[in-house]
Picture 1 (tube, helix red, strand yellow):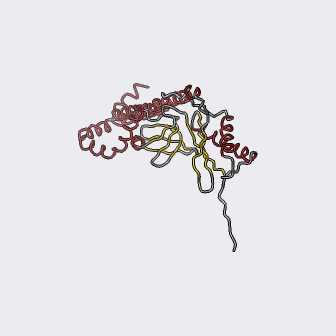
Picture 2: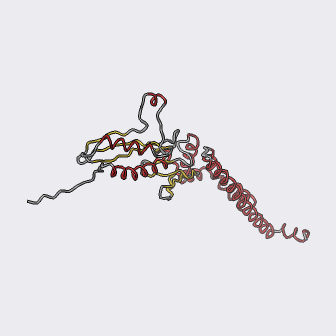
Length: 288
């Protein structure tokens, strides 16, 4: 059988068909290998993400480099296995100066995003899983992915905002998890002027202390000096209300949001039971 195929393969038509078959096989192997590499590295990323490890960001970025390298290697093997494509590539490389200038201008933004992605990876202003706010456009959410070209932010509405790395690298980013994930949320409540301010402050502090998610951030020195665990202050004497502000500390941003909602719900009931009125606008119509 091989003796019969050998003359055919040595012919011009057989050589072309053999090159095409080889190229198809290489492309299939390349696709399967890239898929395997992508799956293995994605599992590694998910494993490190569960432990809140910074390695997840590095592996997530490296995943795209590895997959791109596999595809590039496969394409190069195909190109150099086909004489016509190989000669065309050599011709292009001969005129490489002009092509490099044109390609550089065309891919300037894309290359800028790749370099910016590497800078994000090196300096770590944020990493996968961090709660951030893109201040320029007031976009808040969780860093879900950092690729070669862009950063994906999952918003609180479970939508994805795709921002090029070049913009993320130059923008002002508010990171709630940078160095310290503890969050302080200010909660303001307006009560009427007729209400007992001291009692309102006391009840609000007690309600916050009852919440299991509240975090006591006092230092040992502050505790020894008798500093209160919850700070409730009279913030403002407004036109129609007395504004109280409480500081709610929690371990992270999502916990702080839930803590604030729970305190608001409970303090309304507590104030109603103790004769403290929450202020709201009134309109008085005088008839002559």
